[in-house]
Image (cartoon, rainbow, N blue to C red; front, side, top):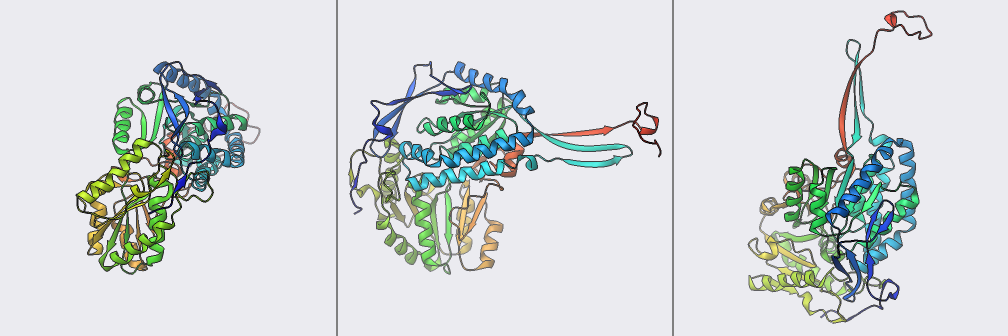
Length: 512
């Protein structure tokens, strides 16, 4: 049985009562007017620490109008000045990375080391955006026809919006607003209502860096705010990361209203372990990838596919490591895994342990046995063996610290399992065989592949996104595809009068 954990002292500087969390429009905090709110909790204690305003359609209209008014001047800003500004943004976010991480820990629950890692990965995209003068370079063809030149340029869309999930409340917004602003768009962010405070703090940092008021706005809310953005005639592009059902809804609704949409959905990431793999390396990778951030990551390993006779050795190696995972409040520097984001989500995740047992899986480790002092939303690390594709634990995106092990007789069976799964976000293979690894990356149907790397999140100068039910539309986020998404191409064909016949004195002999 895992060790007892103790609740931390009250967080967010012991304020009396929940803080009010409002909108950011036109460079200032704007209190909500709807009268509708949602609670924000500290998941480590179960205490409500905030009350977030839910926007009305009129408040969303105001944010979009403000962004629209700011767009002409922002678009006209030179690339060199925009790049300089992004270097200042980068410096400020880096300087305040621990402040941002603290917001993440206090409202999402992830441990501080995970939160700092999240900020660092978001900063990589800000770094990439600093190179916007190069990223927006076009092409030029001289003398495409006699006396005619042809060149291409890319121009911003206008007002863009981002709808972001609870699991990465700092990083995923950076994946969106950084390339969007760098390309010359203005932006309206609708963060998750579960952990919204980091977005307001970042808005203040952008203002401090010199981003003009109205260029970056934040509206808090629920489906009313989401639908208002999807249907708004002045929003040109929508970016979304979240579950597959909502991603499908975002894509269909936004496209119906004439918007450019990138909608990233859910995942069921498989990690294939071949018999020749380094067992210690694979077990370490499985534990960190499955239980880091309490499994609340779209790139978390959810299924280990043990091929051939590697299964027993691998399960035993994973099992040996589980008691060493230190579970506790995120502000405790010794904690390696924190609580889940809400009580309801914790209970839903825990239900898969029982359904797995009822449907025939072997419960190797039961996270419900974790003893908790206090009312935090904790669940221990859980491991299910002998999971079959027809079981709920395999079919559903659990989004919590429950790892399933599926046995496969052959490499071909393992690949077929991954390819037949409706999701195609990320996948990994652990092997010493270079030929097998190359064949795997050639034939597996997923957008991101790791070879002896359990969480293959691309660096910022590539793009992030999956296949199949993990992506709606054809555009991945950040990197080259992010730049293309937030701009539209224009081709110019030009011909000028022959200098020899021009009436303008060019100041030099006009010879052919």
